[in-house]
Length: 283
Image 1 (cartoon, rainbow, N blue to C red):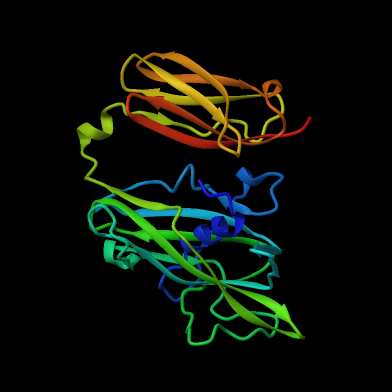
Image 2: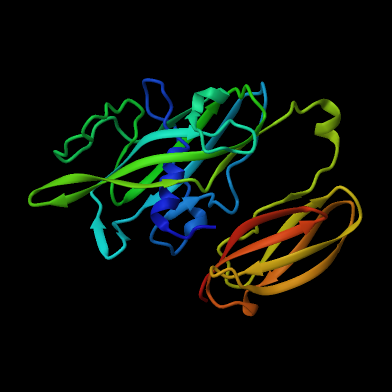
């Protein structure tokens, strides 16, 4: 999981911005970023919700845009951020050949504008019509919607640029492509499938927390599952095997066992692992 905040907020911004003639109707929800100066909800470890083929789909992703980012030895102050393209790789196995998001029946729309503000000029050679400009720093949200027409797990590539102030004006700098996310489109959800139990892991609640928090998960059968907590360097800081019952289960997390900070937790059942992020705040 990449930790570069610029890449993270690029990813989020991209999952919005519809090709309609109006802004996305959404309000940023940054509850998972308490204490962070930048980032997105959900993060790449959690991922965006999956869709079902031929079924209406709509999801919102929120982003906290930072004041600056560092590339190599250069730090850029940000005045604006813009998405220039969102594509998916629809080839089997992912060959690195990308096509428009519309190739799988989805569109994207942001709650930004079509032109920069504060007297800034647009990106040279780009005509922005997707409400893809945001002022930095700031909060943004984006919406992905449509009716998926193809099943699969499609790698997403988000292209974007940032505008940095310079000599009373400013200039646009291409940002690194973000490839941290995937768009998963599942087969039709029939009545039997919808009624059957499946392995699911919920976000811990409350989050952030400074005392205790509960993680609820669903197991389709009685089994042993493996619960782990990782720090942001990827090291395992807690591990426990849980005997799960069929149906709803829970595991309680004691904040006293962790230093304040951001962690990733995972629950593994058989060959499936689901990861999410939690924040332990200072008392």
